[in-house]
Length: 154
Image 1 (cartoon, rainbow, N blue to C red):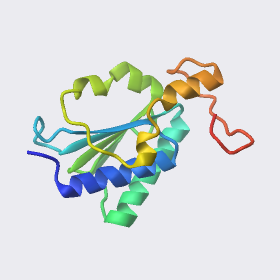
Image 2: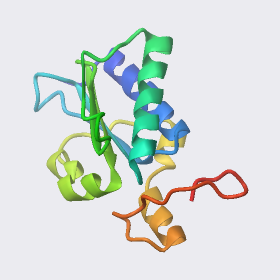
Image 3: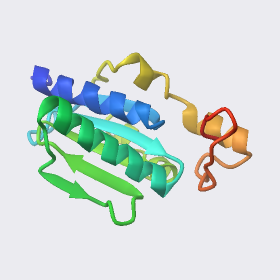
């Protein structure tokens, strides 16, 4: 079994929304062959809690507005270290960079096929390391995110 067209549509819209809010390392897996509860997982991360919340809010708004989809469950938004949005067809995980490294969900799902994503989302791969290098912080640190004079997040 493979992810349904609806699941792929949701994943692509959520990935684009996350990329638009400058998420790092966006990736999606087709987990339909190993899980019966959902078709796909979308993973994204950000270097601070405020940005995690911004990404989650944008994903929720975009999926509701463009596709009429609302999550049946939202967990973790109080601390904004790891927020889970469950849309039944897909589950979105937006994690603080530290949680992303610690829990390494990619390791758990590495045997599942990776789903193709919009170009903007693919370009986010390696952004956590780039951010750490630019700020002089460890990749798992990054709570001092700010905007540079050119509007780019640093």
